[in-house]
Amino acid sequence: MKSIILTKYGAPEVLEVKNLNDISPLDNQVRIKVHYAGINFAEIMARMKLYPGGPKPGSILGGEVSGIIDKIGKDVKDFKIGDKVMGLTLSGSYSSQACINEESIIPLPNNFTLEEAAAFPVTYITAYMMMFDLGNLQEGDTFLIHGAGGGVGTAAIQLAKTKNIKVIGTSSAWKHEELIKMGVDKCIDYNKANTEEEIMSFTNGKGVDLIIDPIGAENWKVSYRVLAKMGKLIIYGDQNLVKGDKLKPLVAMKEMYSMPKYKPMDLMANNKAVMGYHLGRFNGHEWKVKRSINNLIKLVNKNDLHPIIDSKFSFEDSPKAHRHIQNRKNFGKVLLDFTILENK
Image (cartoon, rainbow, N blue to C red; front, top):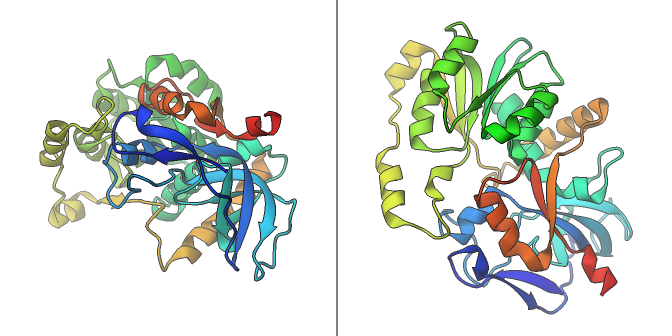
């Protein structure tokens, strides 16, 4: 099988294609002939040694995959060879074969292609659980999405627009036209505008009810200030750590020292909440993810939602794909394409 190996920590070029022996599923697993693998910002951080507990050199990166089952473990009951599926791998999806536990396999929503399936699991589950499980987003609320043009951002917009929710999105200016088409009510160019002033003006000084924020320390301070009463800030990443191609210790130190300190008495006095979310840290509580997936699939099918795909890169061009995302050139999801192997 063809696999993309993290040969060492560093720039995108540390990702190299290797020929490895075929793998076989365990008794409770299926093996997928991979068609597409989704790329997430967490894998870029892992490549740069910025992801605590992340994959080490010698590992195969990748947290989500789509393809066709071609081998089944003896204890698997609900799937068969030939089924089109998508799933969560947490690691190992940048490969032409992936073995996944049966409970981590997700049947395709209605009318999904395999490209869309690879763009779905991590981003949509993350968006859904933050918005509706942690965030308790309600009809009539105002919702602020930082990084609105990325994979999680575009998923969150689609999910929000299934309800009567006003959406504010921050992004580079070139993404605003598409965001407005998707239903974003207020776009803010974080490169030029005063985000805090723009938000408070748009909300007539009331602030927002829910914020999802993967940006970093200084941005979290702004987000906290623009929360309305009963507002919730959910932190799910720190993109400020990713400056350039490699880990920069001084950047990391500055970011760590800039972290806001939330005091319980202030949270209580201001009727605000700050929470964190990490899809990869549900060990022992996987049933909560499964419950959310079931509810998410129903919502997606009812509203005929489909992921926004920015681009597909050949698996051999994984360094280019990583650089494309790091340079903030994507609108929506970026995929690695393994189907080209069928033509070789």
